[in-house]
Image (tube, rainbow, N blue to C red):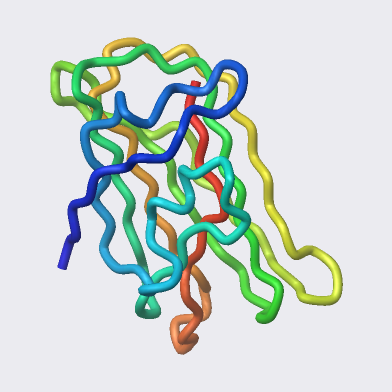
Length: 153
């Protein structure tokens, strides 16, 4: 089930797009104490965490087509060793979907606990950005996806 919510977090310092320019955020699931709004809140240190294991999706829909120059994603996992794969894409004003990046990362509580990605892009006419997360490539895993921060400029 997809939950649609409005974001109300304040603007980050500098170049980040104000979240009130984001019309809505769709998310497949979330834990009650880690809702998706926290991934966009520059004052939060918790971020979003899925309410159930398995593949998750987050989609940001803009009020109007935007130009996007930079996307920052920060993932964090401190308790479970797992290999995550995410796909970041966008939908243009003409309705076509395009992939920006697909990447894998292995988290390890004894070492690699955070993945931070900063993409410099030149996207025009962006109607939405979408993030698909496979929290663990091990099909038998009950790992949950998480996203500490998502910033857009």
